[in-house]
Amino acid sequence: MSNLIKHLKNKELLVALYFFLFILGVSINGFNFYNELRTLEVFLLIGLGFYSLIQKKSYFSKYEFCFLIFTLLGFLFWSNYSYIFYELILFYLLYKAFLNLNYNEFLSKLVIWLSFSIFLMLPIAITEFMLSGVYQNWYPMPWNIRVYNSYFLVLSIFAIWFYLKQEKFNNIYLIFLFLAFLSILLDGGRSTALAYSVFIACVCMFNRAVRFKLLFTYAATWLTYFSILFFSSHSTSSVRSIVRESTSGRYELWVSAFQCWSQNPIFGCGFYQLDQYSGVISAHPHNLFIQVLTETGLIGFGFLILVIWNILKRIKWNLKENYFVISAFIAVSIDLSFSGIHIYPVTQVALLWLFVFLLKNPEFQRAASFHPSTYEASRVSQVFGYIAYILIALAFIYLFFYTSALSESLPSTPPRFWEYGYQLF
Image 1 (cartoon, rainbow, N blue to C red):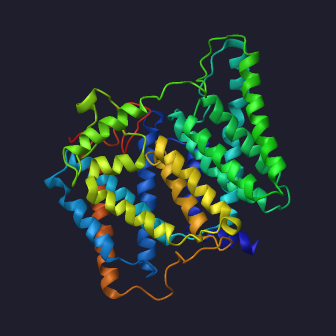
Image 2: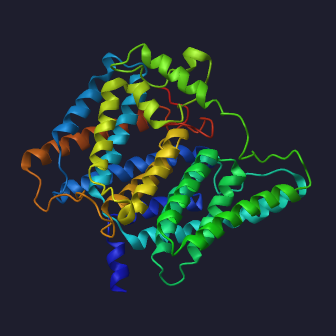
Image 3: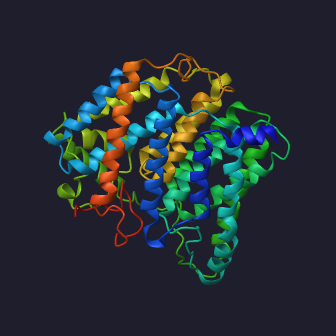
């Protein structure tokens, strides 16, 4: 009981509560659910920042100062400055939240167990598909299906780790892997399926003890998927084939992105302008690295490389001892390169928690620690931190009250920071 109370006092519980709202499909207004979870994400990240400042555990580095100055001066060279300003500030808040959070195994397991409830309608959807050939959206909320695909990928990494630990009732995690991968295959999520497959292959390669059961679960999922397609009463069904030949416009998007970037390689071309170059209307290039390079130029891309290098130098690159962490980062990199896992609010928080798990979990070996120093932050650092967070909070308050960011009239299945942007009143 005392351990449960201890978990409930952790600031990390706020992250679990955020996932809980997503899992249940809670929404004040069903037509505006996307912006609701985006708003909650902002409140969560700002709240975590202020908590760390109050605890005197948050540091304000010179690199953060340079990044914020770069962001503030972006109005001089970026198109649609207000959009990209809020996106960059959001990624800054995610970075700070990573530094301030600690890994909690109990909460990670709790999120997986609760996520089983997402699959309650899957058997009904499969039955209807086999009878009618129509595969309905069975998820709790009408999100873009790629949101759930990427969410399942992240949670599957957690599930495999808990299965590897060989604890009591660990076979339940194999059931989660089966359901998660089956839903990905039925949705035709190729990038997520590729990332999932590579991760399973890497784990099986270096862990012989669990190889048979993991491969059996993986093969059983594929067999179930093809059986569902075979026994469907309609040959032309609504299920998107996982082996379809099209590139879903990825190649065209990337070519257009580089055309856009070539116009201003140093500072980038601002908030997504690709529709001006090829008629391709898409909210992002489905590749984090190309997106950052295109929108913020070499300077913004340099900050991304700095963050990546800061992560890579702390990983212990011994495959036999640290294969799980390396395999997980490979899988995430694949999804970051072909999908929008970094775009949506829920998957952003899922990635945040995954990075905390991989880089702050004491069970993993690493070359250097990501845990902050036990010394209190300096007075100057605290003052700058408070100023930064107060200004950021005021900026988002302005966004909430003086734009249509929370308007009920915005369209569904949004791809970017707010639903297809927002307008000033």
